[in-house]
Length: 136
Image (cartoon, rainbow, N blue to C red):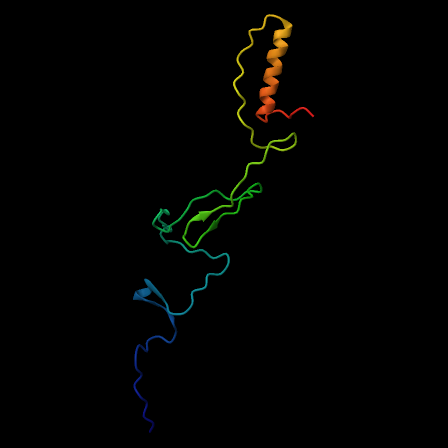
């Protein structure tokens, strides 16, 4: 006659994943793998607090588009950084920054010569501000 030792622990199951409580509870003791195309229902929606100056959290942003070119990075200090931007000078073929032109008072000329003088003053102000290209 052979003596069999009494097993230790729960011997009602022989696997790591099992249903209990009449099927109301599923215990996962191994790895839970969700296959592509599968779905999980009944979970509460994920909740992430908004990021603040002192607290790490979520940020809402629109999706990147083809025209987005500035790459943003998060530093070790948890701050968001983007490279500095220098506005290029405006040119005939380049969109860029221009200065505000000096105010040009309304013309009160009553003769053609006076109107030409006022118009040339306006052209000079536009050129000085970089709104119009200088004379070649």
